[in-house]
Image (cartoon, rainbow, N blue to C red):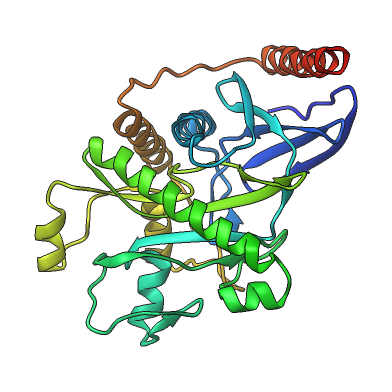
Length: 317
């Protein structure tokens, strides 16, 4: 996808998988690319339709949770594009875990019984649900790896105030509960996820994507308990299968390691898994909508013009 330039553009940022434009220091244009990352490394090949899947799942979930917490999204002018309010981000991510899975399990299996200041009980199995969800925050690194951090450290470093933390915690648990309810209706278990928040003025606002295959992990309800009791690998919908493939090929993003070659067949498999999650989670058939860069640009400009007109109308009313 081309690099765009917009009137009154004040900044541009290329993240691991998104291109983000700031307009008039007021709005954000977020374009979800087909890039894929794992272990904080952007992998060398694109995944067809991944950007559209991520953007449309995020829009679906933001709409389904807007009664819980204000969010940044204003418009989805193109399949892989979102336009929303600019927020001043908190430099942390709130990872909510309903099960002992992924990074939490790897930490537990290494013998540790504390993660981000949260005590973990003895005798747990991989993927076993916690009695109640836990929050294990991480720093939000602009470059390099995010790092685990505790609530105590967050407040001590003044990344958020104590009152802000209480609100973030309340929002995160409520959002996770709603995500679990949506997943359960589709025969899925929301195992874990992450949320990012910022502020618009004094109001806390939910940012970025939520409950997508890049930010979340889903298991299938069917067969879950049996697999848990026998120690079989759970069937899941998430990006974890990509991480597991990389680990099996001796890559975890560590110094000196090289990303293994990704075959055309493997790329197609990843794309199909993303589409499967979209269809399972939303209950809708996925409709690929490839658009030219020119058409994407026109749609974004039209959306921004609508934002500006609305702002002018409010100023004169």
